[in-house]
Image 1: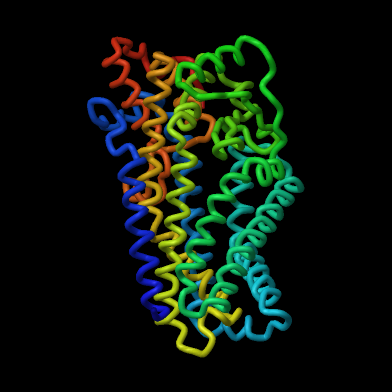
Image 2: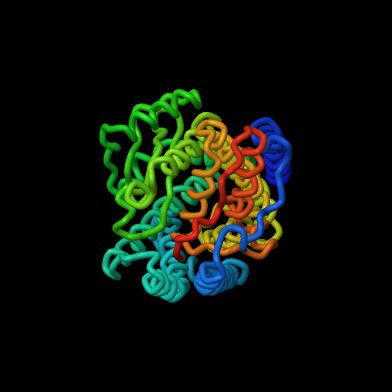
Length: 422
């Protein structure tokens, strides 16, 4: 087959597989009785709290949009015009050295253009008390992120260009398969290779809380050897927990701020949510969908490169790197509504799992409220939530808790403690 046909077959097969896995593994109706409408913000927060959240989050959101726009503009100029190809064409050395050098150079340029926005963002986080990380450690974390981007992107681009050089016509199928496998492998090793570079982890000490968490794991039918605590307080005052990895690398992690700032019943509500993810193997599902999405994207990439790059060499020439990175950035933005829409359903199911396991909607609501207070989150515009929101909003999650509480005969006592502050 021709290169174009290989690209079409890769796109169609991966697309069909993506749809099949999503239809099978995504909870399309995660809330018993249907998803309710969000509660009003005034039912949960005081006017002062809402005003403070808006004062932080609304400018932060616009700052993020501006950074994204500038990043895409620079990437597009370098990738969709002859400029990037000409600059990459001046590189010398073996083809894979040229690929890695081009990736590193473009990553540095990309970081430089968004760093002013990051600096303003960190300054505002310090000003509003969301972070107490000094500028030195913050810069180190920024550089670690840059190195991670260069290593991962460089590896993927070397595989991509190498496949195009080795299999000039069938490379979309070969590269798509290999990169999909690499995505799965990366998700598997991420907890043990990448996370320790950014945080230090310690086991949750023995005691009543650990015993209750292990009991929750039994209730949710999750094998759990340990719960880890991350030293997140060195960079943030926000509250969070997560589950990462799958199989033998799966881990449930709590921020140390959660242990410091929340009472036990709210901690259990957070852990039960993460155990819900573990019970349903949500990280594995996300990894499979990401792998299939990557393969699908390689098929589209091959078709786009054929249209946009009419010069000898095509994908086999390392000077194609700026174009590939620009198309990847645009594709990531355009696919965000699909990715985040699936994520919101998965997160909603984990909320339901937490409520069903703990049978304490009041603690769940107070926990959600505290997460919101600590992060100064506001209620985003509907289009922004649709495009960028990976989780239901706090007001949506509280409405779900209220509905499930009524169904279980356990209505919450109330959402707004009178002595709370923001």
